Length: 213
Image (cartoon, rainbow, N blue to C red; front, side):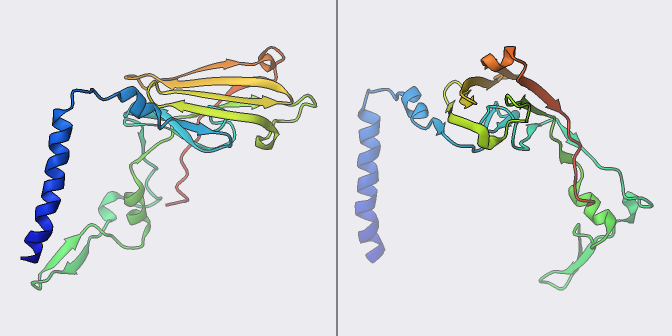
C-alpha cells in the first residue's frame, strides 16, 4: 500500500512532463545545445578531435608538441614478438571449481612470459605524433612555460580546435580538425615565426613499449 501511494504521484509527474514535451511545437535548437558545452582552455589540458573511427589528441598548441599524446584508429593494431623460446601452445589454462563442484578451465594463465604476452597482444598502436618544434631568439627550444596568453577553444559543433598563444611576444595560431569520414587530420598554422624558421612541424613515429610484458 505504501509503495502504491509513493508511485502514484511519481507517475503523475512523469506523465505530465511527457504530455508537456509532446504538446510543444518548438523545435530543439541543437546548435545552441551542443555549443554551450564548447571547451575553453587557458592552460595545457588534453583535448581531442576525431570522427568515431580516428582520434587525434592535442595539447595546448593544437598539436602534440609538449605532451606524448596519441593518434589512434580502429584499424591500427600491433603485436610484439613472442618472448624468446616460447610459443602460443605453451599457454596453460587455469582450472577453477564452480559452484556445483565441476572443474572448468579459464583463460587466466599463470604469471609467466607467455601469459603476459597474450594479455598484451594484439594492442592498439599510436600511429604517430605531430608537434611543433619552436625555438627562442637565443636558439633554445621553447618550453611549455615559455608560452603566454594561451587560449584554446574546441567547437563541438564543427569539430574545429583553435589554439592561440604567444612566444616571446609573437603570436602563434593553430587550427586543427579531423576529416568527418577519413582517418585524416588537417592543421593550419599562422605565425611570423614561420618565416623566421623558428616554428617547424615535427613528425615522429614511436614504437610501442609494453615494459617487457
